[in-house]
Structures are given as structure tokens and as C-alpha cells.
Image 1 (cartoon, protein in one colour):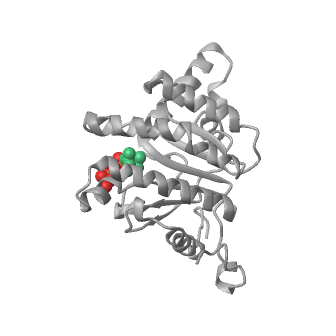
Image 2 (cartoon, rainbow, N blue to C red):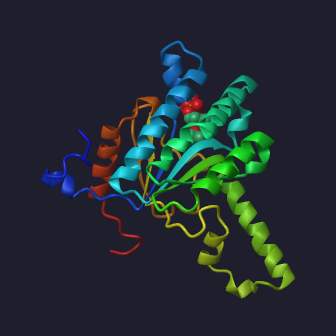
Length: 246
Ligand code: IPE
Ligand code: IPE
Ligand code: MG
């Protein structure tokens, strides 16, 4: 049963809902391999999990959800896998994201869109445009996202502003840097969940995760359920966040 449905349970009342939750959707390939299926079948199953978990996050009151869907390094994978992923993104952008309309979810893409086909880029912009005036959870889908790339991009914009005189070198602050990242205007993630048991960040939200809590779970992403999310939230709720204080 979900935490959301058992509001009368005292324990669930103590669960803290992160304002911003990040999820590294990992383990699709291993899920498929375990079943002697092609890796693309794992990505397809993972996409269903993404759909379910996103709606759940919106229902329980998460305000910002950032999901890592495709990294700047994932182009290194075999052509067959990359093209299966591109086809999956296309069908998702055409159909599934329309689902989120009922939940008033604002859809945004973070990452360098320019590397995708024109068709995919147009679909991304269309989804962003059609959802931008909604008032629900903000869903950031990280596609061709790499945090080092994001930081390089921010440094280039800032240096060009300094060069043109629009910005003073002395006025560069942490807030200014944050404001040139893809997540500009959004709070930093409170919690980052990584399924599949890997203890690493893999170039996800490097600047923004300075004080994020991490929960690593052993489930592979296609097997990840709302109960697993509840479990991660319970772990998060017990953490003592000090932000460098005492
Ligand atoms: C995450 O699952 C999806 C993408 C990176 C696109 P993986 O494909 O990395 O799955 P594993 O880690 O190989 O099991
Ligand atoms: C991180 O997973 C990227 C996504 C989930 C989209 P990877 O599978 O690419 O990361 P590594 O290679 O295990 O670090
Ligand atoms: Mg992986």
C-alpha cells in the first residue's frame, strides 16, 4: 500500500516529501539481460515505470521531479541501442507525455537538445510549450544531459556577459552560476534516488547536489514500484540534514 493512501498511519504522517526529487533511472539493460531479452526491452519496461512513478510523485506532492533519461555519455552505446532509445523517446513524446495533462504536470527537458533529430527537438519544444502554463509538478527530463557540459555552458554564457560588460566579474556569485544552469529558478534536489545498486552520480546534477541526500536501492529501474519510492522517502525522512551546521 502506498504512503499516500495510508494517511491515517502515524508513521506515514512523519514522512517528509522532498520539494525536489532526482531519480537516476538505472538498470534497464540488466533487467532485460536477466530475462534473455534485448536491452531495448528493458528501456521499454523502464519507460512504463517512469510513467507510473512520475504520476505518483505528483500525487504525493513532490513539486519538482528530475529524471535522468539519457546522458551525454550514453551516445557511446552501440548504435542499435541508441536508435532503439531514440525511437522510444519519439513514441513517448508523441503519446505518453500527453497523459501528464490530467495531472497538470509541467514538462521540461534539461540537456543539450541540439544533438537530437529535428523531429525529436520539435516534439520536445511542443511538449514544453503546451505544458508551460500548467500549475502542477515540474518534471525535468534530463536528455543528452551531463552536468559537466551544463557547467561549461554556464561558464561560457557568464564569460560572454563579462566580456560585453553586461556582468561584472565581482558580481559572479553562486546564485548567478545557478541561474545559468538548466535548473535555473528551481530549488536544489533534496533527495536523489539511484536504483540498480550503483554508488555513483554519473554526471547528474553535480552543482545542484551539494547537499542532496542519496538513497541507493538494489531494485532495477523496471522493477521499481511506488512502495520502493515510499521506502526511499522513509529513509530520507530519518536523515539529519545539517548543511554544514550542527
Ligand atoms: C538506464 O539503464 C537507461 C539509460 C542509461 C538510457 P541502463 O541501460 O544503464 O541499464 P544498465 O545499467 O545497463 O542495467
Ligand atoms: C546514468 O546511467 C544515466 C542514466 C540513467 C540515463 P549509466 O548507466 O549511463 O551510468 P554508468 O555508466 O553506470 O555510470
Ligand atoms: Mg546503467
